[in-house]
Length: 147
Ligand SMILES: [Fe+2]
Image 1 (cartoon, rainbow, N blue to C red):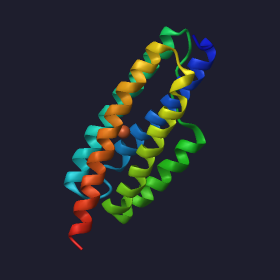
Image 2 (image 1 turned 180 degrees about the vertical axis):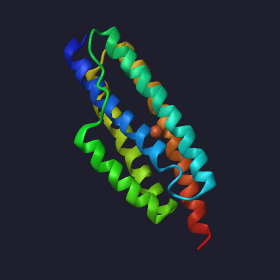
Image 3 (image 1 turned 90 degrees about the vertical axis):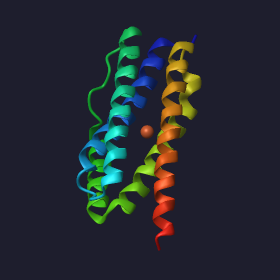
Image 4 (image 1 turned 180 degrees about the horizontal axis):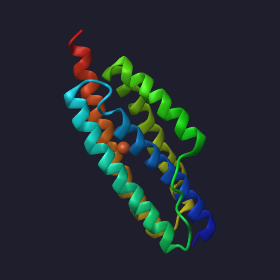
């Protein structure tokens, strides 16, 4: 079994990503101006909140303390997302798609650092994130068809 502290640290890094996504989706849903996208962002914000809770619970089970904020990196990404949201749904979706993609890669890259139970948990989270990517992609493609 991998070192416990290393698991906790890795889970906390992944938790930061979930918190970042949750905040961004909740803060930009009503700025970008499209009803359908707003519905997606609402739903995905809830998914990321659930993921964050699952990760935080697992960190506590391992004896660690879950992070509660995203720090400077989160603030910068949050600002960029608000600017993109003001520019419209297409700009925001592009950023969020790339963010989800990066998030999935972070899980893939780091899953080996985790204990089997945490790996299980992360598998479930990754499959929900793949669905987010699919929905974003479908919406981005329907946008292209209109032009
Ligand atoms: Fe996601």
